[in-house]
Image (cartoon, rainbow, N blue to C red):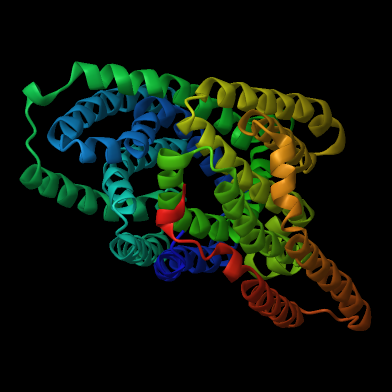
Length: 483
């Protein structure tokens, strides 16, 4: 692992993640005070349903690009690759058009119809722009990728303000602001790809289609199980409660996720090119793999702890009054996001080991556990318990993934034992900070958001400064020494 390259990528991906995250934090208090929980409930249900449509239309294709782009580029066969991708993209476009048209025809509510149309355009333009952005990331062009992400996020936010407060649009403005930007971006991408690659029907490869569809079959099953695991609880809440409860739960879930997932996303944007190279060249190198696992723990676990401690203050600062009632769910969702990230590392390695079937089985088991728990406890204990059910399901998923990915548990235990001092220091610091936090809350009876921000900033700065000093020597390994 080249630590200097990681530092450079960290800078760019931090910028790329910080801009949308900051805009998200700005948007949340503004628009949760403007739109109602019912509006957000309709948005969540339509968005979730289109996510399932996307699984069969475009999502599997983007997974194939992640998996095969480097291989096809090394073989210098990108004309065939992109022509085949374009043909499959067109089929996905036809499927999405038909699904959206049928749904609009049967929908009764005018706002829901607008949301369907906006989601349709979002799905199509996002598929095109994502192809380009994925290749930028795989080519290691972190600066170009993050500049594009940041610029489009800022422009979309400005358009959202105009659509909402000048033109008085309904909640579909939350989607249309990005649709306007992505439509222009998609036209540019189509133009550039047309100049740089030869698109001809003769270049469509039946062999490649068979390879992509064989890979995608398991990928689709994987994504269905994952989506059910992530979003199935919204439908359960809708069955037993009302749309406004879906809106509250979804906004709490989204705020909790963005708090931790922003850091998870930065981490994987930086390390995935290095991890994928490790998987390609030396997938059995457990020592190097668990160095990355340790790096994940040190980078992400403190963020999870800090945001969980200050859940109530985060909700008061960033959510409208009608949404704040769900703040007690936030720690469970944040821990779930943390577990998702570390579990994803094992799932990626299983993909490179061609064990997609095992991934699907594990996800299905976790998904069914989540659904069963939700149907049992949500009607009895309230919609908030859905967050706890999801956490339990993700814990099960992590255990199953580790079991499937780790051929020699004893060897892994030895690797972790060799870093026991580092783990002990990390656990000790976090425990001390948690204890000190509750002492602070006891001392300051009027514990304000300002105090929480100062306290959290001091904790985070102290922890990362200390752990960086402890950990950098252990991670400073050259990329050419993977074997």
